[in-house]
Length: 222
Image (cartoon, rainbow, N blue to C red; front, side, top):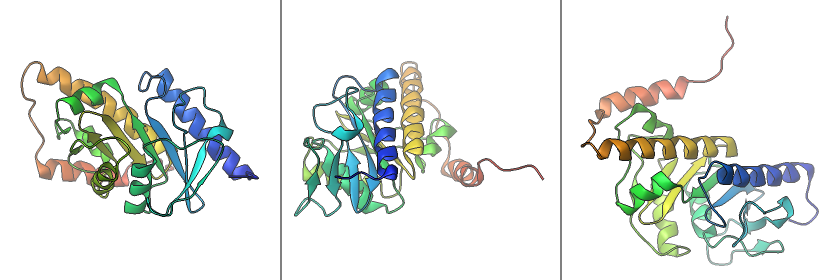
């Protein structure tokens, strides 16, 4: 947006840092993937066709008004996946950031068209018993947006069939944490599948983990 405030400048820099970290970790390559952060009635998002060379001023702003009548600001066109970023924000008012990657392990699982089940308790970092699989839809379409919005209505991550991974969070830092953790778990799950079908935790066991996660965090000692 024109005349960026200090807060907006800080947020733009954080988005760019996230893009560069994803590239450094090997979770995205070239111009694959995209990152957004909620901002003033819409969201800032990486532009189409740009990767780690992106600068803070290159980010586009998209109004959160759905596909019809949506407004854009900035020098460059937003990522072609801006539709599902918007759908995620509309589905969950607590979400403040969305990260999409073509990370190797999650994408391999996506190409097998398999969700990430409760084979390890840390799957709960995505907010539920599993990381669901979204059926295949062409990128940049309303069908994909609707499917992602539905999947993220009660999760912080979903796997896009034959595509990649989407993660979200109440902050950009949380969304990045979810991406890194789920990608790692996808790798472990694929290794386990090479030997056999992993044993899965029961629903009650995952509920216990989710309850503990809800109370987990930094606290001062008495």
